[in-house]
Structure formats: structure tokens, C-alpha cells
Amino acid sequence: LRETNKLVEEFMLFANSTVATFILEKFPLYSVLRRHPPPKEDALKALKKLLASNGFTEFKYGSSKELAESLDRAVKGDDAYFNKLVRILTTRCMNQAVYFCTSEVDRQEFFHYGLAADLYTHFTSPIRRYADVLVHRLLAAGLNIEGLPDQLSHKDRISDQCDVINVKHRNAQWAGRASVDLHTYIYFKKKGPSTADSVVVRVRRNGVQVSIPRFGIEGVVLLKEADYTFDEDKQTLSHKSSATTISVFDHLLVSIRADDTDFRNRTVIEMVRKSSPSEILSYEAAEASRQQVEKEMFGNAQGMAEKPAV
Image (tube, rainbow, N blue to C red):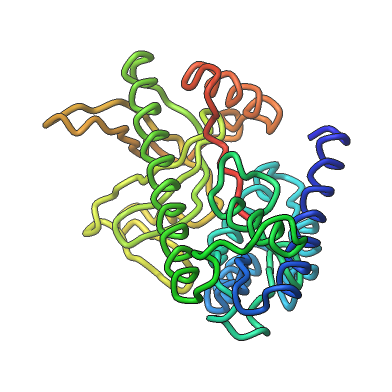
């Protein structure tokens, strides 16, 4: 982002927090705020253990500030993707931010972990989020510009509305992911089969989940469960006959193809072998390739990068 973009974003966050404080003061039982619970403790402990096994022992998460500083330090000199992948894995430890009615939640739970904000709401985008519309109505009533609408005068109705907004938001996220899956399938249907370096981000009993930097996509590589020994604590798969071990952060060469068998229209990713050093693109080359692929997949539409919802 350019410095001006960052400045505008800071002002927007400040505006949202300021409005949250104001409407809560005016309507302590009827305000619509947004909270973000702390991350899942068990998931962060597992991630810390995983990072320690990869040589990074300074992973701390006592507060959002401590976690952010740990992520900045999570650098591996010989692996340009390490920091990005650690951030991806950390994001998956997070709980989802939700809208709520202030009469339904204890005051100590109003905190927004991701922004380290005591109070937060969404005010700045009423043209695209209904929660912002509700907040504008509360703000207008608090400023004596308009009366408080009937729908914002009943705690049960506000709480039900927040529940609906949260469900619709999650549905929109799933729809966005399904759209990415479809565009990925169409891209490889036109392009034909391809091979690329990938990085393991999760190990399962019957396969691994990989990130493919060159194309900016993720997917699951299925493996024959009978051929591997799965160690859940170490997050590894060990081949029973070849002594090959696959673990998180390993680089794998994978084949990618579109498959329309039974009209399922899916993208299939299969392991070829472990990547050789010459097959691992530099971070800069992979990013340039990803941006080009994104343009080809989506044109002028929004790309695959999924910005966390705050």
C-alpha cells in the first residue's frame, strides 16, 4: 500500500472507534458494535510448537502487540515464503469478528483483538454494509438529527439483526471462496495441466494442504493413507517404504489440472515429488507470476487475495 492509502485507513479505523465510543455512551443497551475474541489458545500452542521445530523459538502471543512483533521476527533466511506462511497459519488460529448488540454481551468482551481496540464498530461504509447503516442511524439519533428508529429501540430485534448480518457475512465469504475455486478451474481448463513448486501449510492423515505461490492458490494433495505414517504432534507424514517425510513448510513439486469428471468442475493437485532448489522461484518472481495469473483469472474483478475482515 502507498503511504496515502495507509493514512486513509488509519483515519477510517479512528472514525469507527470514535463512533463506537459515542453511540455506546448515548445508547448503552442498543448499540451495534463489532468485537473480535482472542485467538484459539490450543491452535496457537500447536503453532508455537510447530515453529519451534523449524528453528523459530520466539513466537509469543500474550497480547495482539506481542503476537504482531513475533510475526515480524518470523524470518528464515533461506526461505522467502516462511514469514508469509507463518502469517497465514496464524490467521487460521483466529476467531471471527462479529457484530453484536451491547445489551447481550458482557462489557469485558467488547474488545477487538485484531485491532487492539477497546471499542469498535463499522461506520465508514454504509453503501456496502448494512451494519454501517444501523450505526449511522444510531449516530444520527445520538446527535439529535433524527429520532431513534423503532427497530433500534428493542434489544431482541437488534440482536436478531446482528445474528442475520453475521450469517450473511459468513455466507458471502463462502461464496467468494467458491468463486475463486470456479475461476481457478476455468483458468487451468484453458491453460492445460501445469507443474509448480508448492509449500505445505497443513498435514493431514490422508494428504497435505499446499500453497502454490506461482499461481496464488491453495489446495489439498491427497495421498494414499495406507502408504504413510501420520504423526499428528509433529505434523508429519512418513512414507513407509521410502523413508520420505513430509512436514509443514516443505516444498513439493505438484501437478495441477482441471477435472470435469461427473460435471464436478474441480481443480486437482497431485504430488510429483519434493522440489529441488532450482524449482523454487524467488519470492519476487513468484509474486510477479501470481499477479499476472490473477489478472488472467479475474480481469478487472477483485482478485484472490482475501483481506481479513476486521
